[in-house]
Length: 261
Image 1 (spheres, one colour):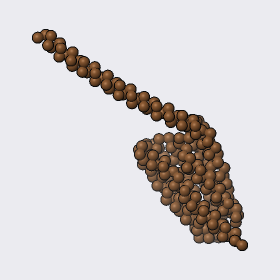
Image 2 (cartoon, one colour; image 1 turned 30 degrees about the vertical axis):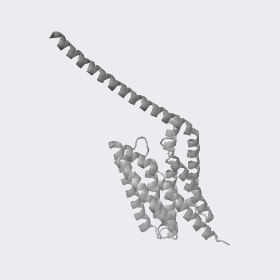
Image 3 (cartoon, one colour; image 1 turned 180 degrees about the horizontal axis):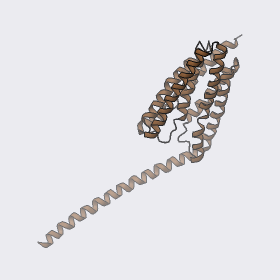
Image 4 (cartoon, helix red, strand yellow; image 1 turned 135 degrees about the horizontal axis):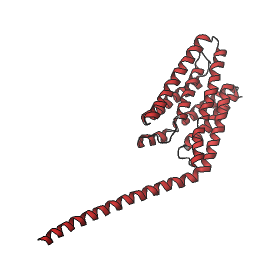
């Protein structure tokens, strides 16, 4: 019979693969941002929240805090690097005030995690207590990571458009939360169960919103395209009209000169 630990390890490996997909899912969004040279209405909140979450889970998985958590370290260490790249791109392609806000939050997160790590490793002297302190913070900030998309969900409901809520990110969040909830329940870990079960629920809510407003989003995008096409036509027509008027003026001047002769 397959042991519970073997099943948990298999689910954990699957969770690593799915979580990697979650971390990489915003890539098309950032390609779009790089091409346009602007973050437009995209929010930095989910990426800053995920970065903070990854930093705390790396701290939680360290052998001196919570031994035998290599799968937690591998995926969250990878996620930390990926999310940091996203945040740096956000800083590069944001305007002045927004750039300073994002940079300020990034520096604050790094300092905060560093201080917590220093205090836990120097003042708390057992694995159980260190796991409890860091695990509680992981639950709190992991919940924030999954709640962060509520900002985008509010925008979706207000504008009746999912243009700025990528489907890939919502779907990956749902599957990732589901997988890691299963991982935590096989050998019960409360600190992993709480944020990831909430992540499943919020991911499902985003998918429902996507299904609800997908058609209205397409109509809005088509309307924007047609407006842009009309604007281009107006520019072309106006340009041709100005050219004709200019030519008539030149011809009229030539005829007038000839008449005076």
